[in-house]
Image (cartoon, rainbow, N blue to C red; front, side, top):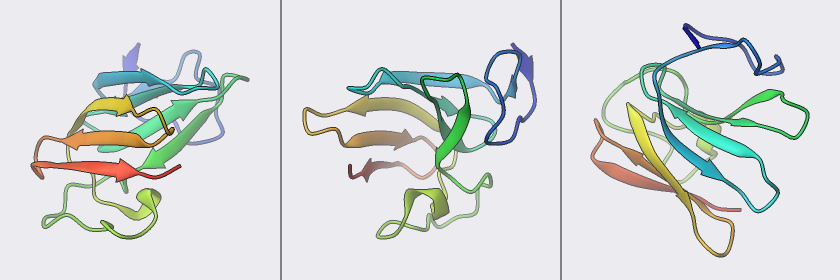
Length: 104
């Protein structure tokens, strides 16, 4: 892939992305990935379209958005991703030294 940034609503095929680290599939087969260098967690839906799930694209500290929408959270250098059996997404943020829980 090519490094850079491709906006939401764009086709994932050929997209420019930040360093991709964590990968996880949800129960519907959507692919989630962390863009480590762009400070986002994104998803590719069944039609191959990109969507931001968490992060505001900057590394402001201290972390923000802990009790609000994940799309408004500061997710600095996200790396690991996983889902629990209830469909909640967990995001490890290396820089913030936290694990975010994104409730289903």
